[in-house]
Length: 592
Image (cartoon, rainbow, N blue to C red):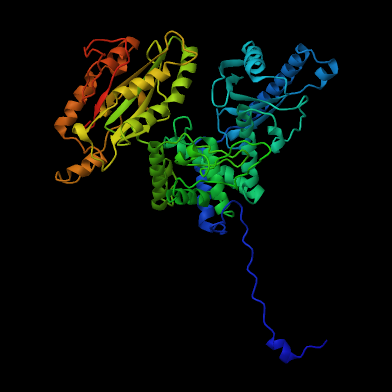
């Protein structure tokens, strides 16, 4: 049929089709823009700074890691065959018996640095058990090897693990027993079927590898963007460690958390290079409205397997999570459940710091990575000293106490109705000049700005500390000599060993508001001291004996009355050295 021009002109014209916007995660990208010439120059400067800062390991250490993993893989295979024979299986079964290892964490993502540990998963057949075969038989095999040192079995952890060094390389070894009599060398653990007939500890152990694999799959543009993702993640991990917010166990974020945050930024800016992604990272999370969750993919539900997934609509405890960062592998979980209101507040402050530094110093990356001035930021600190009979006992005791510190933060928040802000610092410090095994942790304390406190601004946390110490001392593997002391120190009383050069940095005089703005000064921190006060401070520092404390002195210090209205006293109120846990009363009205 011939259509006339008149008819053709009068026929309706279809509307233009909109180009489909590709979505890499659960939300659409914010921008598809690629780098400008300025971005490329800034990227070169950023990568040079990372190289100069030593975040990349050398070729020799890389080769050593690969050799260690090959050796460990053979140990696992021999161990499984030995157990198969001991359990009475046929010789054919012994010959086919197999165990495999998979890596996860920073090593699997390709962002590990020098001296970093290798997160490793051992996968064995159904008849090889975690409780006996892994934590006793394999433990004893490793214990008898010259290449192995610092072996530590933590079988009661949320994710049971054996920690050790193999030829100097730190290994965190997990175990998962799957429902197979023979474990194939090319076992695909990304498929949900690997979770059939497994317990929660096995699921958590497997999910380390499953999450790492999913992160790499969900980063857009695969090859090009994975390289950008890795460089960005290296940068963010380095920044978080410098700023004192890298520690899942203390209530901040660990490696997988930072990886998930970085991966989402890659999804939002799929064509960006690291200099752009780092800048966008701080812009995005400075304005993120927590507790809105960070998710790389929709949450998967598998009715056949029936494992619970993160769902605040159905699970009441999930509604209490303050900074949910959801893992992308089934069963999807909140990887940042350790975050408290105090640590969330500190991390948001640090995101603001990063965003501000990038905006103010576009030509200079070094300002972004300035170390945290934690020991200059507060007037008051809690000092948690731990001692043990020897270095081996201290290693396990330190790990246990460190895992409990976030509960001290939570208890202080609970008992002060969140009016006392806690800033736990993730680093442990040791006075190496002392003859006993010792470590110390520190927590900055300040009143929440703008909050009125009754009872002359005093915070009574005596029972809080007693409760914390009672829980810590219930350690299942406690040995004689293991002890813990909690004491209050002012800024000027901090021990010298917490400072890099063994002494305090010269404090710069700050411009301060007029004396009439008293309330603002209380909220913001102390003003620059007068010459008379500086002189008195030097005298106080010289007479302080904190740095020379031994175990018995620590007991005395933790139980004797000291200044700032912290009262350490025995149950009957006498100022003697008690055997009971000390009690603490804290006032924040003095100036350090």
